[in-house]
Image (tube, rainbow, N blue to C red; front, side, top):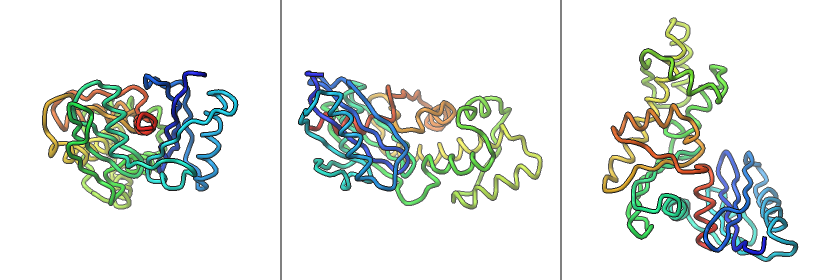
Length: 253
């Protein structure tokens, strides 16, 4: 791929993403893998694979972002806020508010008309406002991720899940099941509870433009619907939502 220009790596708590882009910012190749404890080795392997795909011996600049960005050897390092804003603006082509929901944190970013970061808010202190909240409890309920959206859609109403701590919410959900509450309603209630916490981040960044969504949780249609309901406005899921940070990193190179 002679048109390849840069590589971006986004090392998250759940997945490690890497993309290869051309001069126009188009993604030529990508890699998405579950995050490995040996981040340095995984990042080097993914970068090497993309460089090989670009052409033998290709020396391409590498920019890293995500919580493990400082452990990517030889890479320029940028914050998640900067890279997600850059990637989202490239995909949306306009100002707006981006809600990024990952496994470790959730963040809302106000993106200006030139793609700059105007303001942001972040939840990185507790798993209750992140994708991990759903992952832990849905695993306890033995509901495959592929069935989550359909399960929530069947609910006549959401069952309230009041605990704001993931550990306590897990115990509360088990009690709700034991009390005979419908599983569909519990699943929908989990999404409503999470959406309410994430919506609070976005409300403080109101302004013109679309409400955009990225991150692995954006692949969950039930979460997208719950967030749209909580904010009372449409939510546009960006293409390849897991790759937005890595794309922004590559474009910054």
